[in-house]
Amino acid sequence: MSNLADLSNPFEVIAPDGPLTPLVLSSPHSGSHYPIDLIEASSLSKTALRRSEDCYVDELFSSAKFAGVPMIRALYPRAYLDLNREPYELDPEMFTDPLPDFINSASPRVAAGLGTVARIVANQKEIYARKLTWTEVEARINRLYKPYHQTLRRLVNAARDQFGYCVLIDCHSMPSAGLPTGKGIAGDSVDVVLGDRNGLSCSSLITEETERILSSLGYSIIRNNPYAGGFTTQSYGEPETGVHALQIEINRALYVDEMSLSRRPSFAKLKDDLRVFLETLSEFSGDARKALTFQRLSAE
Image 1: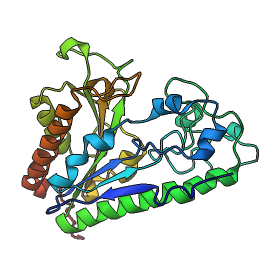
Image 2: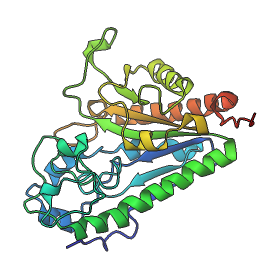
Image 3: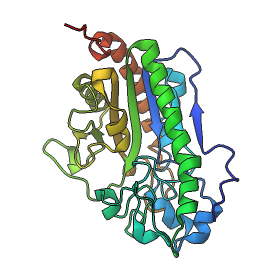
Image 4: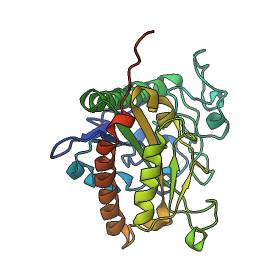
């Protein structure tokens, strides 16, 4: 049984106060509205379910509206439905009934328990105390997933139509444990991982400028390890058509206590720094417009 009526809208678009820029933000994993059907079907407490949440990422980037950047944010949690997956990456073992033939049950995300409907939370604990039905999951996909991506696609197309190109920033956070270390990283701590699918989803100009800006603000940066980008960067990032998609993963230890999920005093500074980042990247992208714009080739 699905209970989605308690959400008047499963996502929110925060529109800019001033003139638009070519940037668009997506925050698919920061939702914190836990529907009653998830709570009742789960063997975990709400606190345990929140371990998979990109806590407060939408709030960290909330200055986007002042920088001329629209942001779409999910209002329901990743543990309920993961928007950074294909729409039908599902594990048949989680269901009481057979799934349709078009389901992708062979993806590595499904094998890891992290499909469109996840089997586990971040600490490897099983989410559900019972098996699901195709009817209830199909309702989640139709009500939550499809409208989110339809709206995100409209935002991306609108930016490209207006400016000739779009820079889509997919905003995430990552647990501090298990991150790689590297030469030149202060205290062996990685602050931000940039994912551009190893150069496939975004112009190197955008990735390099993002790294430069965040490094100048004091953050240690690595690229594509261990997060090279997910469904959003893969699906939307088409530099050859003028759409550049870059995933940003922020170390949660920078701004939140990872056990209590309470904001650290450093939260405000990170939020301010991200506003500087958005304003600076918007200005840079305007200067680099010719290189970022889709260049239609004449037929020979």
